[in-house]
Length: 288
Image (tube, rainbow, N blue to C red; front, side, top):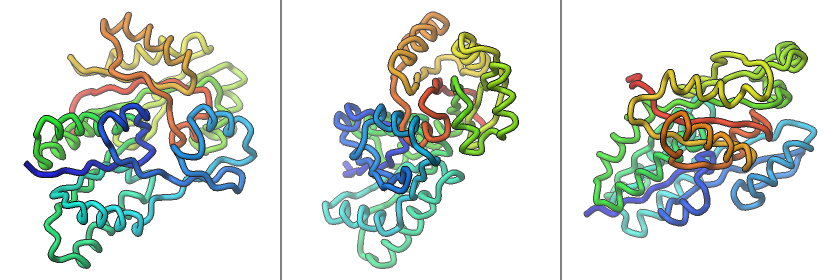
């Protein structure tokens, strides 16, 4: 049986307990907040980052994972005798990290022509546990004896189906990040409007707008019910533990089953939504 390494990045938002349980190698992003550099998952918790967001003067900036770091990672696993390595990347349209991994793969092959380790670079086309949960499933498949090619096929099929529906209780951060124009954000705040935002194949769009905080969670669920595939599980995300519990309770009532995971959004998503967001991740119809 092949010895398979499973690697992803910290924008996957995989909870620490699942990282440890499945032995997933998570490469952290570096984030700069008001001129100070931090390493995600090492220098702050999610809750601490939300507090940093609430008080920062400028929108934090995330640095891509470099080609050199990937080359070092590939060499590390080759030296350990791994036959296959699968790296699942943050959306290639939102970060150059995927391209850096692809260049590192070619460079590694050029510099190590005798290496027998196969390297697979998979573009998640998304963010957060949209691919983090798929990486956990890949780890379960590895433990069950699946080969690397079948795992990559599963990942690509999942990424051709998975969708995100999210909203936030303030438009301050989507205005700062440029996701919503300043004028639209001002009008939205004035009228008490909250957007229902979708992320599909890495593309962010506003599906609808609802009036008032009380309608955010019910509207998210209504949107998901129209698009979720029969038999699909779902995940619940938030930047507030109590909001996550509340959304999970409402979802269970509507969908008839518990979410597969309830988790906190990490820095990559929270930087754009702000520290007051909720989301549902699910599989819809296949798009490719």
